Amino acid sequence: MPTVSSEELAAAAGVNSAKLRKDFSYLGSYGTRGVGYDVEYLVYQISRELGLTQDWPVVIVGIGNLGAALAGYGGFASRGFRVAGLIDADRAMTGKQVAGLTVRHTDELEPLIKESGVSIGVIATPAGAAQAVCNRLVEAGVTSILNFAPTVLNVPEGVDVRKVDLSIELQILAFHEQRKAGEEAELREAEAADAVQGGKPAADAAARPTAAKKRTGQGPDGDVPAVMPA
Image (cartoon, rainbow, N blue to C red; front, side):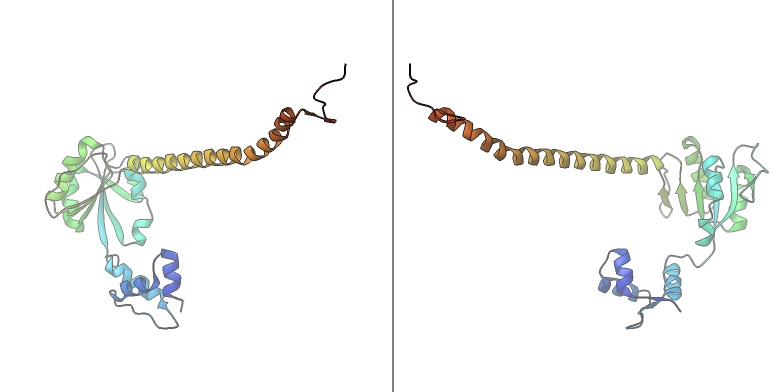
């Protein structure tokens, strides 16, 4: 039976092993001294606390390119999220098969939510339609919404909304790239300054003998008489 130690988990997570053991104790998982944690049981405990040990029916509204991609994403099922239905306002989409599911018209949104017990809705519509879709989801009993539309949704108290804005994620990456470029430029400037400073003593040392020769009247063959013979 595979096991893992708290030290291994702490190193992978970048945290203190004592703190990790304390956090796991709240899950009811104490592990075994000298052996560690049963990996399979630990995964179950964490999944249970995250609500991933039960089936969560999800409805996706807006089956354009993004909505279709979400419908076909295999990671949902492995984490307990089952796509119960696909909804789109375009009647040309009604009846089409996407990721093994039949697309239904928005007229069927409320019946779908009721018959499937949906509590989580995904909005992948254009911004202009998102709020109206949100209102219908909430009125039908949906209490959690994942919003991919580029707009802010207004919801009543008790409804949770998570906004996924890909442009913001790209802006964050651009910020880090800009910061790294600035740091690299500063490093190059510092290295150039060090090189200049490092070269000065040698240049000064080379210049000093010449200056001394001029002051003492010395030439390359030795002392030069103060008065040249006529």
